[in-house]
Image 1 (cartoon, one colour):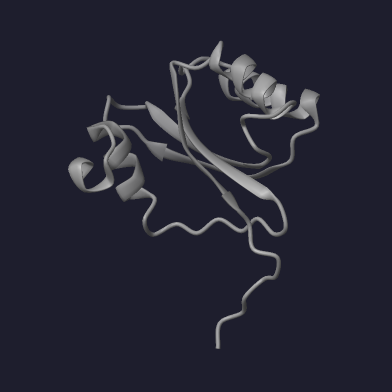
Image 2: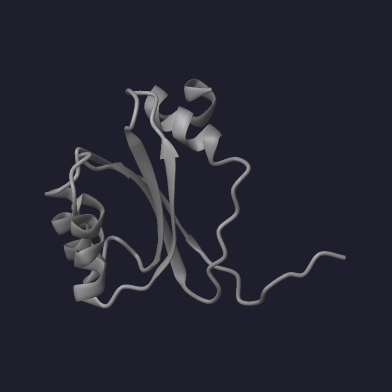
Length: 118
């Protein structure tokens, strides 16, 4: 799969696990990242606080068990901003200081309308 996606094996596993997930951001550039935080009290709050301080809108956060070991989790985060521009760039940099690792999954232009199933 990594060769097919032209990415690292870890990114390929993350991308494959996201195949069945759909994020709904409407009218903005949306960015998806996956990261791991230490299993200590307040770790999740510390990873999200930079976005609140910067005024970056979070649209989704999801935790999934990590294969690294019991009680280890990875977090999928979607937010409405381009990570190459301020203030999202600074929020991601601050977030990375309190994460074990951060992997951007991509930025995409969100839909301008919500599509309803037939």
